[in-house]
Length: 139
Image: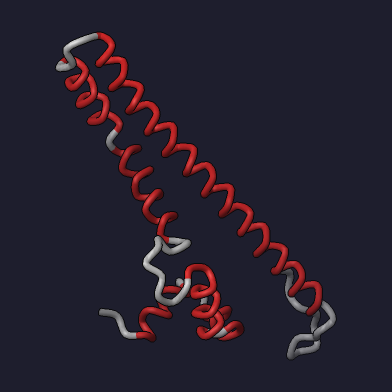
């Protein structure tokens, strides 16, 4: 089990400067606001991880999926059963891809918000001279 400090280090993902500016308490509060302290529901961000793993697993095992499905289809007693099984798998693959598209869009929106924040911070600090009196470096 990780210590609280180690858990917070992992949560910040090496972004120590941001951690120092925002603080771990804010991270905990924000995280708790998403799904509550005692919620047994799937945390807001856990499904990103699960679907990323599933997407990677499918992508790395396309050949195995194809071979196993072909074998399973041969074992179906009727053309209708074969078609039903085929489309059930196709439907699940389409649903997985659609979910990944949605999550990617959601992450893209979050990235745009971070870029907006970066621009706002940089713009606000353009007038702040550096230690040697030179203007701040380009971001």
